Length: 130
Image (cartoon, rainbow, N blue to C red; front, side):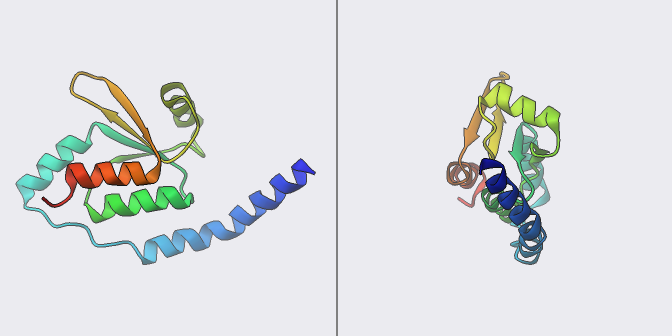
């Protein structure tokens, strides 16, 4: 029975994935427009961030939408199709859950943040309009 349930959900994901990606592309928000110097400062701060995600995960889409709205240039790491990224996520964060934001501070300390709401709140707090 378990293999049948897995097959059902895999098939469902395969059928729904193109529609989810199309919906994401059609409803992407416009990014914040900053002066060039301010955007360069934001880009410098986002170089130490990486988002582990699945391309069609609804929670990952929610987080990527926030990144788009805030005009953030955060590296995306596909943990679904890239085994190296998946292994790094499990080794560093302890679980294969996405979305997961990897925050590396100036001293090299890594913080792994899970949950789309927590990630979005942090992004808004750090990079949102004052």
